[in-house]
Length: 144
Image 1: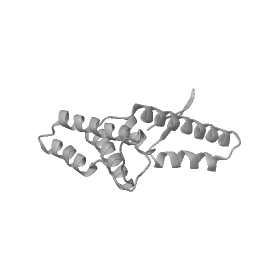
Image 2 (image 1 turned 90 degrees about the vertical axis):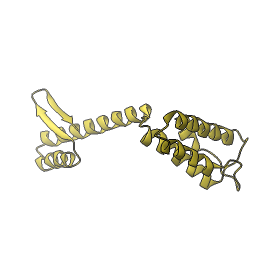
Image 3 (image 1 turned 120 degrees about the vertical axis):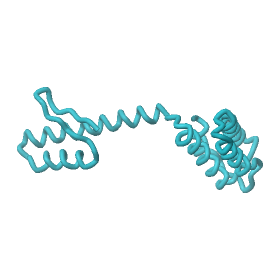
Image 4 (image 1 turned 180 degrees about the vertical axis):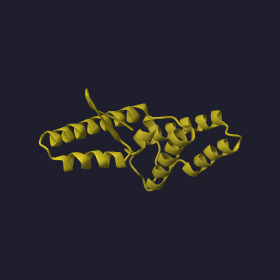
């Protein structure tokens, strides 16, 4: 997963010393071979090796090939194999929880100052994006 992140930091060259299109074809061949995940995983490690070679200055890729490498790694790791980037997932959940908590506090402040229009607007707009606020005796909670 570090290889996927590192691809955005690679420097592009005018020519490529690695045939990324052939590597992409091998990834798809593995999937077409009855979803042969061991071969696909081996190819993904090969892609990570390419990232490290370019990063270390031992190989070169054009910007087009860097984008193709990055998109292929992301597609097969996250979408095809379904591997989640836990740092990104947990970080996003923490940010969402913090943001909703901030909005709940703003809504409570609006209710305390009798600005019910703003309070209702916050509740309604959160509900529109799938976040339901629940007012109870212990305060406001939410679910999504």
